[in-house]
Structures are given as C-alpha cells and as structure tokens.
Length: 448
Image 1 (cartoon, rainbow, N blue to C red):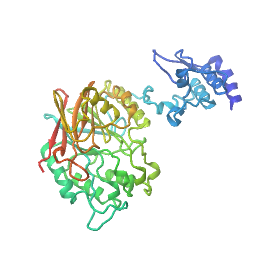
Image 2: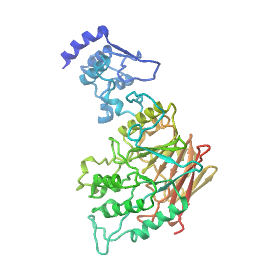
Image 3: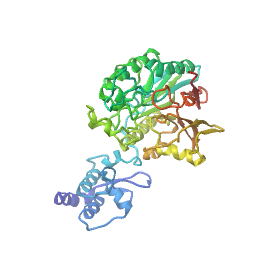
C-alpha cells in the first residue's frame, strides 16, 4: 500500500493541485494550510503515518479525512488518509468521508440548476400549501404516552397497571380539546406518542394514527425515546405512518427514524421550513428482543450524520431559492444549547416551581428543564436560518424563551398518561403572521 502511494505521489507531485476559491479558516486535506489540496499534503500524511513527521492539532484535524476522530474518539492518521487526499487531488473524489461526520465542515450538495421551486421528494420531503388571507396555525401536542393495559394484563417488565384510563379518557379528549381550540392547519406530535413496552402488539399506535387521521388535518410527528421500545418495531410503526391518509412522514437515510422536512408555502411564497428530527436515546434494556434492535440508536441527541444532512439540505434549498428561508426545528429531547440559553438569562431556573413572565419569555416548570446531547447543533443553526426550536420529553415543563435570535420552547404535555402535573397540561400553538412572517407561541392550557 505505502509503495503504491509513494509511486502515485511521485507522479502527482508534478501536476496535481486543487485550489480553493476564497479564504476559509479550515479545510480538510489541506495539511500545510496553503489553501490548496495536493499531493504534497498526501505525502505529509504518509510521513506522519510512519512517524517521520509530527503535526499539531490543526494538522491532525486536516489529516484525519477518514473521520476516525468522530468514529473512535481520537485521531488515527494512516495511509488510508493519504490515499483519500491523493484521490481528491487528482479529481477521483469530490469529498472526504469526514465531511459527512463533522457538523462544522462546509455544506455539500450535488450542483443543480436553480429554478426557485422546492420539489417534494427532492430538496424537501413535503410542501404544504396554505390558504391566503389568514395566519398559519401549527399545533404541537407532546408526550401522549399511551400505556393502556387491560384488567389483569402484565407487560413484559411485570408492570401490571396502566398509568391512565382508556385512550379516550387519557389522550383523545385532550387532543380533541386542543384541535378545537387551535383550529390548526398542521398538527405536530412531539414524540413519546406511545410508551412502547406497553404496546408490543402495536394496538395503541394504530389507534392513535387512526384518531389523528379522523381530524382530516395534515399532521406530522417525531419519534421520542419511548416509541421504539415496542416489539412491533419502528419499521412497522413507520409503515403505519406511510399508509396514513393525512400524516406527512418521511425518513432520511441517517440515524433515527423520523428525519424529514416540510416547506410551508402561502400565496406562492415559502414562509418557513420545518425540520422534524429524531433525537434517539432509547433505553437499551427495553429493546433487547426488538426485531429492529440493531438499527436503534440508544445515544440521546442528534448524531453527526443527522447534522450534516441538515446542513447539506439547507445549502441546497438556499441555492434553489436564492435565499435562506427561516426554519423551525421540532425534536423530542431538548439539546444542551436550549438549557444553556435558559441558564444564560435565568440562572435560578432550578428553583421549583419556576414561573417565568419577562417580556417575550414566559411559562411554568414544576420539574427542572434540562438539555441532552445534540452538541453539534450550534454549528448548523445559522446556516439553517433557525428561528425556533420546539421540544417535548419533560412532562412538567412549559417554557418559551428568546436567546440570540432563536426562540426555545418546551411544549406542553397533552394527556394524563405517565407522570404529569394537572397545572401543566395542554398543547402549544405556533402562529405565523401572514404579513410579517413573524411567529408567536402560546400555551393552550387544558380545561379537562
């Protein structure tokens, strides 16, 4: 291998170099940091691999083009990296594997002729056309957590009693109330729709899908950490969603089961791009016998390939439209950056119960609002033109705050299954002003 690379290097050193247009702070493959990627960089990597040369952190980062730092947690620089750089220098590849792992790497998409139109199934998964003459209303309902067990039934971990009553009394009447209040154009379920280990036959999941379709309103959802515990498995669950008449659902070829995009268009104008993101994080003990066990990510948060998918798609959409339209992100588990945003302005949020009424910041929490994972999300929000993030997961938190141009909202729990606080039950209404395109958030407290 090394002999072959050295032979190729001797040829490539004479003629091969890929210049970089403009100036960038960092470029994978540019080991000597001269704004060019060429065979000299590959030669340096080869020398490093046999300990004939040593690099500082920046050099190691540029050399690890195979992405071992993101896979193994440390730089592993060897002949494989040298060969990848050489292939890049002679035009045999257009990108490095690490660029699909590093959220900070420049966006990449296959160039295409921009026409100013987002095509469903291409740059975006769905385009939802909304009637002109009214504000757009999006209803978020979270943590339904269906846990119904019939009398005497015992689930596989020997829990023998339901948290709530029937689906009608514990979930559906709260959904009905929320829909009646909001009169939404779109409904979003924010994850933990079912408590999977209580729904091994998938009956609760199917009942909720059918109930959502009964509204005859477009709806979407993200997976939480509990759905995949069901032995029915996420493949069966997603098949139910694909077969739904009103559910807008897709799943990109990245970590998780619910990663997709929806563009809101009104009067021919693209108003917002909605990102539905899977924050993973399932308990390994509860999926041991799942048919899809090997495909389930148990680590909480957005993974690097998801962030790269977001970054690349956002760049393609901006290229097509000639401008970046604002984005709203829906995910189940709040990221660390949401907790950081809260602590920046409200360091006393650990004191419970916590009530917030400060200008545009408002809400109530009777458990501590926390963030988990998604560490690289901060590197893509600007390129997504992110204006808002909406979460679920914590059943007794309903807070909405602004920080550095992004509104972070811990949405309300809908229904009484699992632990809850009757004073923090309801739904979340997001209203987009037709004229200004600004959005507002309002908590719709339940009267049930």
